[in-house]
Length: 207
Ligand code: PRP
Ligand code: URA
Image 1 (cartoon, helix red, strand yellow):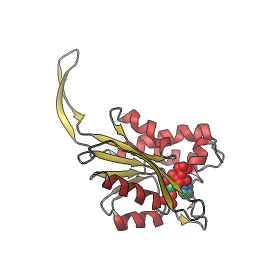
Image 2 (cartoon, helix red, strand yellow):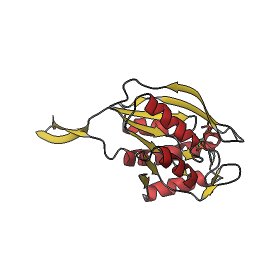
Image 3 (cartoon, protein in one colour):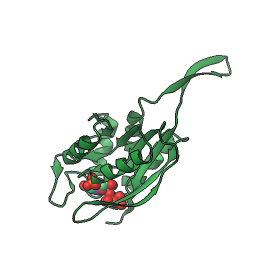
């Protein structure tokens, strides 16, 4: 499976701030946006472009503009922490929402909400979910997207565990994953080690 580990110093710096247990919700949110801009930029590196000419005050200038339909799909609720960043980069993107919730003891993801744009077949779909732990949520999200007609899906995460990567690879070997890091693994509570704790709780102050 194509896994892109984004080593940019600014990404790694932001990751460390997110990991730090002293980082409160306000800084956590700002940092999540900062790292997501950089990750989404990487994840969209292969977008198609179309040649265009514009008039500068001095004369014509040739250039390229993004061509194609882009759909960003945050996985609720933690994925919302990455959404503003992506929309800042791609203001014209369409947005779908998937509501998934891990059971606190079994970590089995249950699906409680979907609202996806129509006509995903020719779209570049970026699913955003900061944490890929057991991989159950990612798998369910991908299943819902492909069932809705998506064919070109990539995922941006902030921390992934090897266990989750293996699971996604088993079922979706062609899906590209963009992440700053592959962590050590999962603990007995199925949290990523060292990870950063519960992303949604830290983002929204619901600890
Ligand atoms: C977190 C996270 C992922 C999921 C990852 O969400 O945002 O969606 O866990 O774990 P998995 O790979 O084991 O499925 P959670 O279910 O805690 O919900 P929340 O976003 O509402 O906090
Ligand atoms: N979800 C989180 O927010 N953190 C983890 O470590 C695992 C799942």
